[in-house]
Image (cartoon, rainbow, N blue to C red):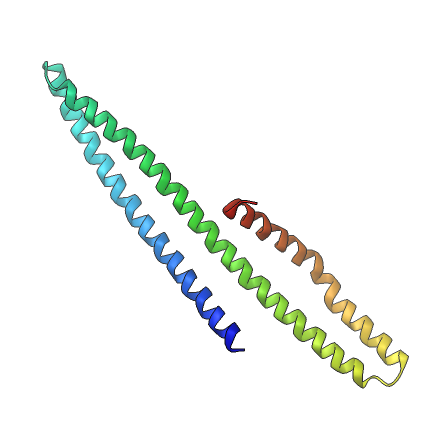
Length: 158
């Protein structure tokens, strides 16, 4: 029990860290937009000066800066997508763990009831009740498991 409890705390802490990183990425995106606007304003000012016959070297430097900013914005966007997928994957894993715990508890209860059954008819009734409970949820769980397996492969590779 203690091991599972600590593991749950680690998962919660990791989710908080991912959410904090997502907030920071959003902040950086806002700051990048402000910087891009300032850069465009500088470019328009330099454009006027170039027409007047000066500063071609500065224009090259500004163009290089714009290229680097575009690459940086692209990497920030990729990092944000990765964080969002990590968050979705973690939520799916938590959901799967809840399903597993519920299934284990159900199997344990059915096992306990089975031990108390005194006839084959009682076992048959219990078996039918168990199937009615389990089988409708299996396709949904399999679909969800395949979704987060695909997400994990996209996020972490094969």
